[in-house]
Length: 304
Image (cartoon, rainbow, N blue to C red; front, side, top):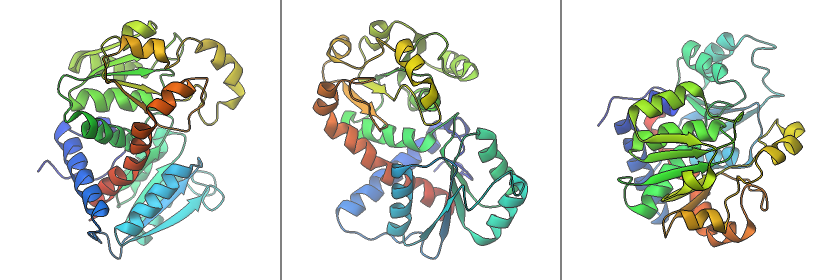
């Protein structure tokens, strides 16, 4: 077993061995769930779920996951808890640490997640920030390994906005041992420091050339062009990302049997065609299901 993990703030904090340990546990928990084997590993534990950004999948998967593990999940909306406004984050962290056994937070600033971990005394899980989405990428890696058997020799290509998904896929993909390619237009690049790290650490490239980046890919991944909070930029982004669509022509450049992944919600006709989405719906919804299993593995790893 690898070194114990205190928090899941971003995948860059984890070693490749720690990531694999979480994926192996997720596989085991999924198997047990499918075969009716109960696993009340967090009986008597309570997870606080702080949502400054709303989400269907994140709330349902954490709440159901905690219930399946024998614990309780407590939903705290931004109305219930004005972190940093009514009370400084360092005080909120210390108060909640007296009541809860762990916190999952979905918010805007990565610093808020880092501060909760710094001042609190319980595990903190990043449910999404503008910088990173580690839980989603653990589910993605789980799905890729289920389909492909291992990560060895695989090429992952992300098409679209260099956002939190691109940032986390770069780290997760490189740490898993895959080649990673990012196709995105100038002005929408992933985090520069992460790209420098990826170039030094593994097989990585980021270019505006969509077909060039998708050539020989085993996994093609996309996300919406305008994320939550960017609705005002929707028209500008539609113009910028024209041509950055996962469609038949792009998949023709990829390897035969290429997987398609999407973190959802999907806008058919924008970042992905309806035809490609439906042809790959099984693996996309396997990926959505695996959020549950991967997050359960994270909670058990941190909170048991």
